[in-house]
Length: 190
Image 1: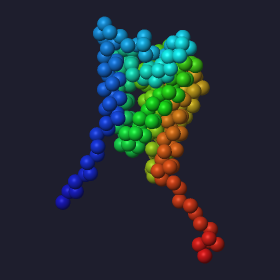
Image 2 (image 1 turned 180 degrees about the horizontal axis):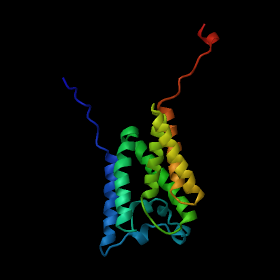
Image 3 (image 1 turned 120 degrees about the vertical axis):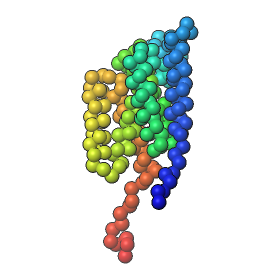
Image 4 (image 1 turned 135 degrees about the vertical axis):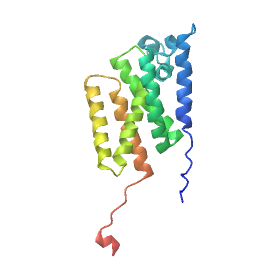
């Protein structure tokens, strides 16, 4: 007799962010363009347009390659991470990592936009999931992801910091959800 698999909720947060980002990105192919109002622009940030710390995540203006890579990565990583952390913590991971990536972008690549920095944070969260797994291969995967992030930071690529931040934040979330067992000394047991 085959046991029924438990139903998993659809990844609602991933689907919502995917849809909003797809809609904003699609507007780039019409006469109505959002990039000038949403992209990273130091002059606009200096003019107190604080929304530009988050809004670059909602447009992918660099063409089909950026769109294909970012949306594929968002669909895959987003689903995996959301199934492990749930929608609320997923949104925190996505936007906090995106903010870290946007700040790195202002420092290292001041003009532009794209959801890849937030998705990089989801990659960092995946590294934390692998690190907390039982399989040794997971730890190898974690080391490869974090090593790659350090290389990106060395070369001042704005995707490195959100990977590291996403890993740290996800690791904190995992630790809080699964605290380590306290070991008792023999004198405490007796």
